Image 1 (cartoon, one colour):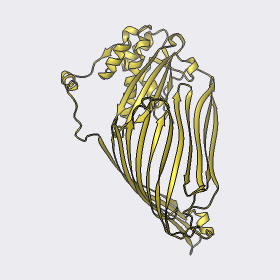
Image 2 (cartoon, rainbow, N blue to C red):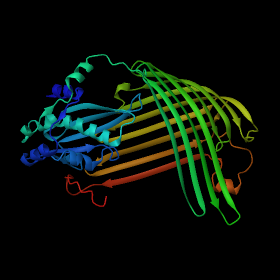
Image 3 (cartoon, rainbow, N blue to C red):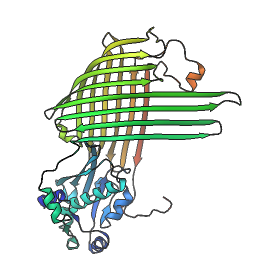
Image 4 (tube, rainbow, N blue to C red):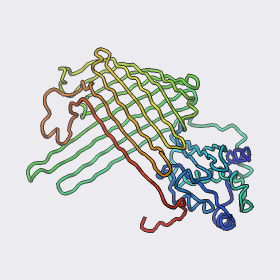
Length: 421
């Protein structure tokens, strides 16, 4: 059965069990398949999948499931996504595991994505429903015609040679009688990603304006401008190694930088093969380079411009498993002429199931900051402090979020009722 499923997936087949046929199967089945859908709600809308699979009992905890469906996502070179749909057998199916992939283009709509995910899930359910009551109500159908079959036997030619582009323009405006706020953002991105080389270029510009009416004659205005461009060249070195060169130019009124130029190169090592990125990734990265700064105002160190050498090291972990997700990174950077001028930042997030029905979510970020060479000389005014017109001196930053969730009651969750949603 498993080779049949893989071959069918490659040929874009799907289970015929939809609509009336699926409902009849559910009516005849003595014991619907119990499934726990392990996928973020913003990506896998629960009501949609309940409606698509009426012959499945979607349960709210993995302990009550016969099949756990784990959906993970990584970006592709074109700007689209590669979704991995992993089905893990539980209870009487313990030990069975199958993996299918869904590739979506960068302009795919949310509806297109969820329908393609549903098609792959239908395929992944085939081994489980085949031996259950009501199996004769299902079939496997091949959608491609003869012309499509012939096309698949010919080598595909990409007229863009793997180059992908994106142009974006965003704006927002909001306000009330005594306050207005607006932001404008434009960006251009280009990338060419293959197994042997990753090339990414992007440029952006942003303008923010906030106005606070204090009284009939006084209005405080805060304007921020920033723009920049960066180029990354990252050749592949085997299945665990990579190296990169990065060039960047930035402008930020908030950080007192009229122009900042960066050039750096470095190495990266992944403990696990890069091919396993959808489930686990543990990287060690080191980069060193040269930074050239020109400032709007005289800095605390009495500089209008300067050239510095710097280095950065980072440990990063990302894991997605049936028990939850875990991510953490530790990054340190310093100017080589004075290592006391450095920054160390620790970030972490996790969402794990502790015991049946009980889950813990955590996000935290803390940084020790000792590298603000760009701060302008002199004290900030009360106005600049209150409306955050410029960055202020600090020795640390932090953000922490902790949450607990407990689910109990009925183990089934199949009803679709969108009233007052």
